[in-house]
Length: 149
Image 1: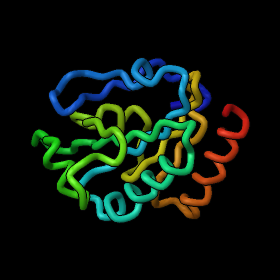
Image 2: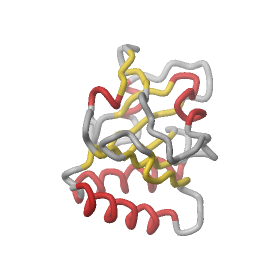
Image 3: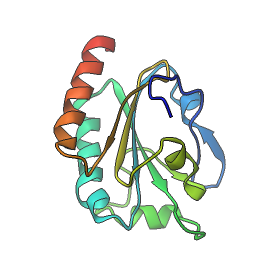
Image 4: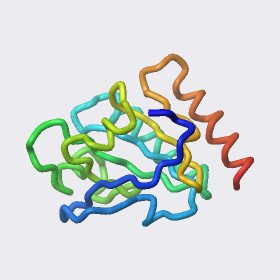
């Protein structure tokens, strides 16, 4: 995928298996998508808390978790909630059945951060295990929110 292209849809499902297009639902907003999996310790131990911190820090972006499902098991809201200390979601979380969106973004693994402009352009794609990924993500958020927000 050429990251300079505009993305026209990001289709995932909610916990009722209803399809949701994130670009429609969060139209004209900066989106920070976190592709993760409950079985990924780096995701649950570092990326999810970092996403929550971003949600608190950057009020003008929408932080959205996307649980990529890599097997045929259905993931329930209870499965997702099981990784949190409180019984509520810290930000919206959706399901990527059959890892279709994960594949669309040519993901190298989880966690994967995709930062989209309000126009749907991929501003940055950062694999959580890349060198200096957290700092690169901070710089991208600062740059985009300064230029757009």
